[in-house]
Length: 160
Image 1 (cartoon, one colour):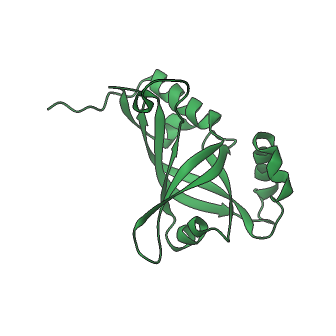
Image 2: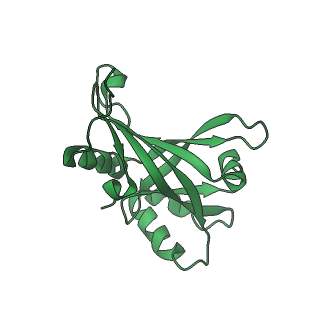
């Protein structure tokens, strides 16, 4: 059987970038440190200055505790729009490592300001001590651009 993965095209790269750029939340997959089982949580996400996902997470959340124990994770962005079969709508699954940027670290102020341009309501809590920005250091990406449109992308394919 032939591979369903198509050669990466500029159109696929742009669709993946658009999915990240339009995302305001995503499904974060982590490994539960207590059971070792998979766990998925919805988090707020925005495109970082480099085009890769940037999130704001609290140390009080179970997914942050899981990421501290094991930073390997996945993030899916892309929500069905309009009518029709949700499986025909594009989505992007990213695999990588979570890296926390805490208050006082050199890049925190600029990233926080950037985050707030996309999620202004986060101004209410972005300064709380238990919150940190989370950069997803992408290792690979899997784009499902709709029926029969599967692509594997690199971090370089996603950067703006």
